[in-house]
Every structure is written in C-alpha cells, then in structure tokens.
Image (cartoon, rainbow, N blue to C red; front, side, top):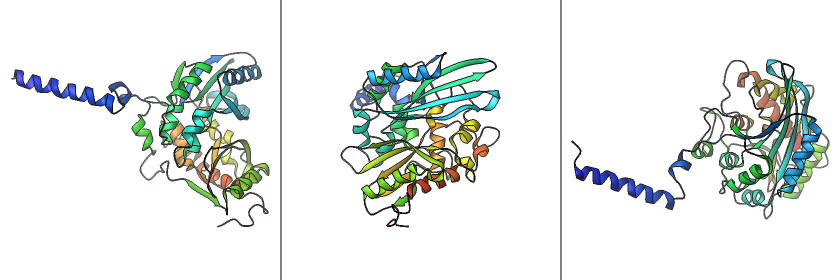
Length: 331
C-alpha cells in the first residue's frame, strides 16, 4: 500500500534530482542522447565538380577555412554493384582550434571532414553531401568542449538532414571510454610512429615523408594548433604494391557498404606533439567511425584484416621522413 508519506518522499527525490541536473550541466534528454559519427546535409544530382565548388563556397561563407581536399577514389567498385566517387574537404575554424588546444591530443579534432560522394547504383546516380559530427568526434577524442557550436555552424552552412553511421548511436559516456571489443585499443593507445630532437624537426620530417610519398602516403592538409607544439596532418593512402591493403579505396570498398556513405572516415591522421609523432591506433580509428561493423562475415573487420597493420606501416614510413631529415631520429 502506497501511503501519503511514501508519495511525498518519491516526489521529493524527483524534485532534488531535477534541481541537481541543471547544476551539473545536464538534463534528462542530453544524458540519454545518442550520437552518430556523420551528418547527411543533403542529397542532390548533377555535376559533381559543381557541387564541390558550391559546398566550398557555403563553408567559407559561414566562417570555415578550407585547409585541404582530395579525391580518395573515382569510379571505384563498391559492394552491391555500386560505383563511387568521392571528394573530402578538410575544414577548421577558430572554435575548433581553440578546443583542440585545451587537451593533450586535441589536435585530432582540429579538422572536420566534409564530403561529397557520388553513388551510382542500378542506373541511378545520387550525390551525397555530408560531414563528420563535431559533437561525436569531440567526445570520441575526449575534448573539454563538446563542439555543439561548431556542429550548429556546419548545419547552418550545409544542412542537417540525417545523422547516420550507427543504427543506435553512442552516448557521450560511451564515446569517451570507447573501444570496439575486449583487448581492442582505446583513444589513448596510439601508435608511436617516431621521435625527434625537436618539434620543428619532427614536423619537417613528416612533411618530407609525405612529399616523398613514403609508404604510398600524401599530404591532404597540415594544421598547427595555436599556443602549443602540436600539428595535425591529413594523410591520403594510395595502397602501393606490397602494401595494397593500406589504401583508402581498398578499405572503403569493403566496409563502406551502407547508405549514406561514410566517406568522412578519410583521411587518416598523423599528429606531431612536441618531439613525438603519433597516430590513433588504426583499429580504434576504424571502429570509432564504423561502430556497427561486425567482426566476422562479409563487409566486416575480417574483410580488412590486413589493413590495420598495413596502415600503421605506411604512416610510420611517412613519419620517418627522408634520409636527411631522419639522421637524428631516435629509434
């Protein structure tokens, strides 16, 4: 039997909780909010190059700086008989740079990726304009700032038709402690690619390695984080002979099989922090953008089993720079 006193206690507890949540900067909705890695801005048709030009204008008109772009594949064969072409545009702004400067490895989030992907399937062609979800990435990369303002600015610039990349999504808490499965790496289990005598030497070596296309790598962008010795590079991977499964097209043509396309997984990152050169553990980097990817079967982690090691190898070769740049490199 429920007595008036019991009802009063229940109401009092609920009232206290309701008062405390705003003080903690939370509410019931945000506490339960599930985030997804990508946002589809809109779909269209027509000439892909013209769409890219229009997207770039929309971005710059809304205060974003384009730091680099590349086409990871053109007319590539994807699952289900699809033909896919893609353009990835790296963008930043003062809010992203400020947030990146606040944490030890915040540089990974300094550049958001905007994508234009053309998909032809069964005779019909669609162009998808999308971008990485800043709030998802802010939590995955453990920033102090959730980048909700940046997300809003990207929405104003391009649109917010549909969040995607995970069926159920992940909470902020899930993302901040994310790893795909038991014994799989976390955000703070990076690959240690190289060490040099100074930050300047490390940056020069990475630039030289990318310019020389070591390991099939190429530079997409380079962004220095203001106020600290940290520089992030966007790295395209061609997958050369002998290390084919490091390639952007190799990986995406096997695991990016759902609609809309998760092109914003690319490019990979090299982070120079102080005198050391890092990259996110490739298994973590793939899983954070494809959290629903199955371990076994078609279009699964097993279908790209060779990729994590191959990508790490390519990034290490880039980080070693040229012979001259690495003359004082530490092993």
